[in-house]
Image (cartoon, rainbow, N blue to C red):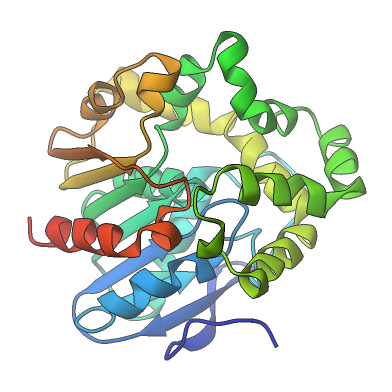
Length: 292
């Protein structure tokens, strides 16, 4: 029996031709969509989602290529672009009866959320991003030996074949490394949940690699086009992240403000998996965002 978010109903929702997303839904009221990161599933939102469901409709999908959602083959380099994954999210909300919704994402899910906000400004009412920089900026700040912390970004950017073979040879060691190294409070991810994340990731190596490969290719092209056009996120935006700027030598709030003029930016003292390590702080930030 896989762990689930208590009180949530699980559905499979078709979002594109041949692609369905496994989705947990609960609550009533204005809709909030929560997108998980790597190497996780929608289960990472279990504390935050349960709180928000008291007065919102909360929708927690597994992203395409992750968890129990479909994992289409990436035949042309677009199947896991953040543009495609963002379109999934809009289609998911619409299928559940919501033309407009608030959107929060962590890690990979935050990159999908940002792309959704840029591509669908009339649909995303509020946007929260947890512990990322926009793709274009992420690559710009990774330099020198400090970039070693992001070794996985470079590994999965390689052409199809080698990354999948290397990761597939010892998936639990690879994915488990990030669950351990990025967590300051190990108890925040109990053994049963950790096992669920490892199982899900183990079964999704090609699609996870394709997601990351897109962020070294087509996602960068999309961001550059938007930067050149002066596109910005028009909705209220909240960003919570660790103080990576101090560690790697950049001003995170300044980088974000270029994309998000209506920005609330704050640093946190917990580890990367903040929705599990500091759910009360995350809920407070999301509720403050929704009130803007």
